[in-house]
Image (cartoon, rainbow, N blue to C red):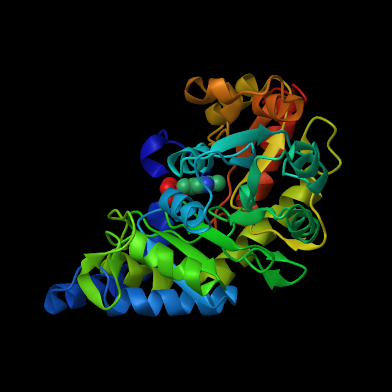
Length: 379
Ligand SMILES: *Cc1c(COP(=O)(O)O)cnc(C)c1O
């Protein structure tokens, strides 16, 4: 993000000013329309965006909420997952995934991930299943899709709910179909830096389960019933989507596939240029999936030095995430002990610039600087 970087950064990590600039005139018109309508929460723009997004992911129901964390928590609650239940979840995720499980009243059972993809696998999920397990939350981290076919088979065999945290995977596909097909529900975040980002916060639950959709819709709006705003049937809260954000998101959704294709082109060039470099370890990609490359992480030795040398050369990088969830102070009580793959990844991962506005020329520049740095070549 531009504000976080030195002014001389030649290749930003993600430039939200540049990404949103082409939409400026339409955003301003939408703001004007909202002021004219006087309706700022819910209403027609939210209904339209829910329909647009449901069509996009080919699901029957899409329910807008305030953010991706609430989307996950309300989905768990709607599926009856709560106190006394264990939820299998990879430790290699953004902490919000864990927060949502705890907020729903359940206990996260933090597990390790595949060393190639850094995603949850069916075998790991299977091995972690106990008599108390109620659900699996699979995270399509970095925009890469976990093995949904086999995970849904495990969930069905064991009688577990399967929920996809797709906060980093808008537009990602498994066997050609949008994520959200093989599970009880998928949840999304529209935080500004996500592949589909609002100009503020937002989230969505998508599902074919009508009862689940109705629960989330009610719980996100103070537990109201659709036909009587003064009747409160479930414990609710305020987790509504703003009308103006929904308008912005409907507009940006039209360009999501194009933006994801640009990310994919950049990723392909990274793979071409770094794939044979033994100083840089790329993630494995499952050919059954279509990744949307929310991030492009690589593993390098002496990561912190490499990062600062890249920064000196004008290349911004990130770390996703430096401390796995089971090592975070807030969640140490849940730690099952050493989770070696996630811990090793956390110490070596470095995210290279990735964005729909990243040019191929800049990808090439990043790769040549990175190779110079990791090979110890001086300028
Ligand atoms: C961003 C994110 C979330 C949370 O979304 P918010 O909208 O910030 O609440 C949850 N899970 C993952 C994997 C995320 O990247």
